Amino acid sequence: MHATMNLSASPATARPVWDRFVRVFHWTLVSCVLLNSFVVDDGENLHQWLGYLASALVVTRIVWGFIGSKHARFADFFPTPSRLMRHLRGMLSGQPEMHWGHNPLGAVMMLVLMALVLTLGVTGWMQSLDAFWGEEWLQDLHEQAGDLLLLSAGLHGAAAIVMGRLERTRLVKAMVTGIKETY
Image (spheres, rainbow, N blue to C red):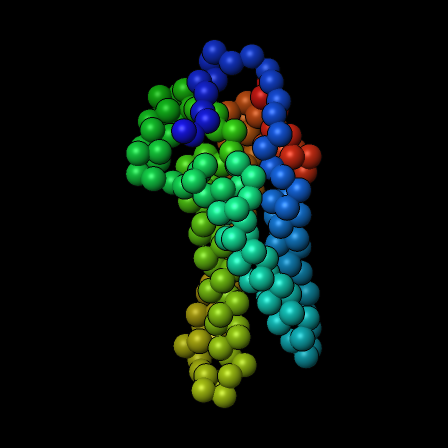
């Protein structure tokens, strides 16, 4: 069963949500994306290794999504159509449900971000192969995926701030401390 609560009837409370692995994964991936986006590397070695690290992080997070703690598991937050519809109805009615783990829209964004990182990892690796060396379509796909990742990450950050206010939770703080608080 997915843990949600109606905000209008809930007192202020706190509970452990994000385990250490999830928090380290999150902030390390953020660092990889930011460094890879804004650091110029003439030999591309740093860019490649950060990309490989980001891809390895995502693969590890996928594994953790099956074996990790309660709120890290995909079963806790996978965005099924019924979960998405219930969440959207609550938001549109002005009575959003607070989800202790990822809410359904946050889950969609998380999956999109992970897919983009893996797309970047694969297309970056493919560019190093003789079979794809200099292929313009592959370079374009890699660049477009990078641009989409930055846009999506920005939207993700903004949504975390907005949803924290709507749900009356300290959502960003929870990704640092592991404790999600309502107020």
